[in-house]
Length: 248
Image (cartoon, rainbow, N blue to C red; front, side, top):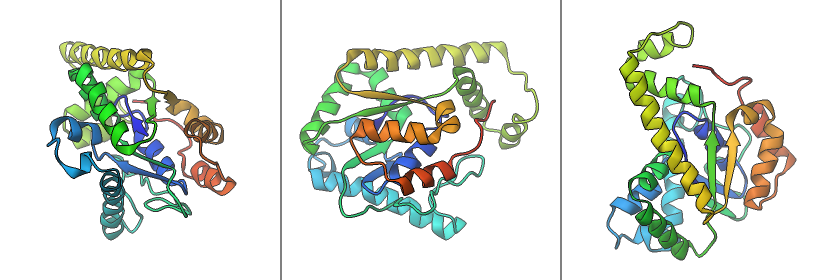
């Protein structure tokens, strides 16, 4: 499973919920597509199924170990200090067997597609030949106004300003706004073009729906991936989800 889309769409919490499944191993931003596209084609990570799966699994474990040392909570935290660790789950590990392996790096995947569409599909086909299994995509979706506004504020690089934006109006230069909207339009059309190619199955997951009805959305995702959805897993995901979607 691969993610394609934008940053600031709730993809991190969605990835955490998936990795919490007893039969799923999902790395957090290994940047798989970017690594394959820009790396050494002879690298065994990109040519051997077992080596690739181990790299993705080790990536997630290293994040968990690092975060456990520093936060006593597990896994990385968001820029707002929100822990992504799902209690009472199989995050960073699995039960009995692995049914789904993947990488959560939506923006990186889309950037490769935007840069060279023909090569992008060659990379995906190469990975499909290596893993010898179908590849599916998840497209995290969020209110575009929130995506653009959040990205603009984070691009400023001012942490104090970022937190102030949660409770205060911030006036930004119009040219800067126009530039950000233009870039967003290019990226969104890249995703649209990929989805319309219908070469791979894509599931669109709206952050607002995931927050409002986590049980329904988790069941939908599991059905899309063809995996079971145990009640204790659903409960862990529901308990983890924040109560409302932030609005920038």
